Amino acid sequence: MSLKIELRPAERIIIGNSVITNGDNRAKLYVDGTAPILREKDILTSDTANSPARRIYLCIQLMYLGQDLSKHKETYFTLINDFLQAAPSALTIVDTINSKILTNSLYPALKEAKALIRYEEELLRDVQPVRSESLPEHG
Image 1 (tube, rainbow, N blue to C red):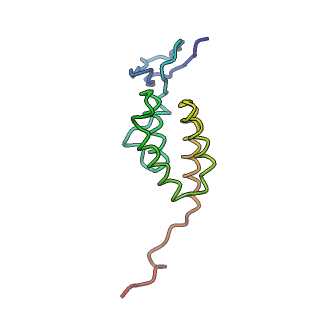
Image 2: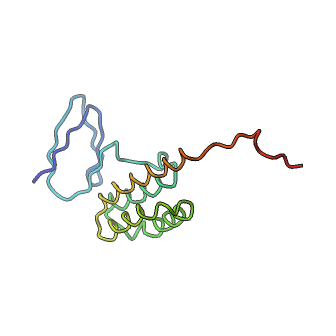
Image 3: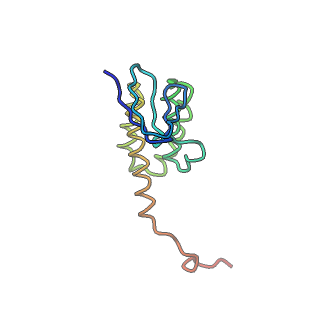
């Protein structure tokens, strides 16, 4: 069964090692095969991976697109360990991501990494900014 993908005008998609850019009109693609596929809205770059959870997502994305876990494994576990030290409450999400990776279910791992990004955003929203006038003076 083919995967049906509808692209908006000028939308980009990665299929395997290729970036495909749609023309001026909506388009439908039917893809057969097992090449990794990512829509533009799901792609992070090193510039847009600007938080710890986004860097984890980017690492999994690289695993998925390159179909090579070993190349990124050390970086992934360093990022995960650092994240869990800062936010141990994320352990359930991280365990789910790890489980997906260990079973080579990299696309589902990416979806779970999006949940980690949302969780990180919630944590940061709950942090109250410290105003400088409330800080004690050092002297």
